[in-house]
Length: 264
Image: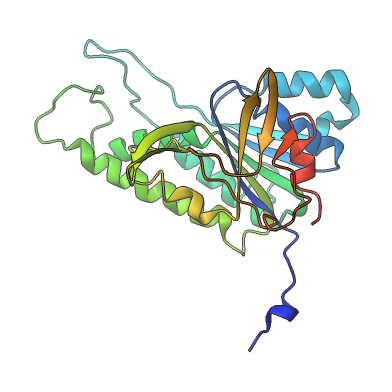
């Protein structure tokens, strides 16, 4: 029987990185480049320009340590409203999680590479459109009642798919560092308002953080952007080093992620 004294902490880290829009989540990835990590970004937001511009200006020699694949569905307009007639972003992202463009497998990239999912919010939206197509409702505009179609079926299908992605990324056999970037949704739970990652609907939002050993918050303290490591009244955070008194409650935005990913 394994004993606690024989346990070896993993060098692989899995972080759920949450925050409101425009709190600096994506650009804060730059510190990981200077710490020697390679970033492979699953780009659902199409908002990488600030990070790339920062790298080009401050450390152009590190630009090739950023690789990305972009996944966005194409909309078209109809008389009833915009639709996504042929959603592909979600399934193409899944294929890339199995095999990257160069043929390598993310689950084998190891502890000097970080898979960045940017962002979980828009990936979830892509999962919803995929689920609508699976229900035969891809050509139905949002919010328009359609005979024979039950939107809750699409929500349920998307939610299960999303949770499977979370389980995949946080599994022990996915041997690569992971950062999942997500926006916040504030909702009432157990009589209190709490912040959770945005997903499809609200049912799975409280469940998502339970899969991650670490949850950090990009936020502001006065006029400074910071990465918070300790829980607030509204947002529960965690870290495997929570009992380390030397772990700061707040880390500077420009160096915080590198500190977070440093060896305990």
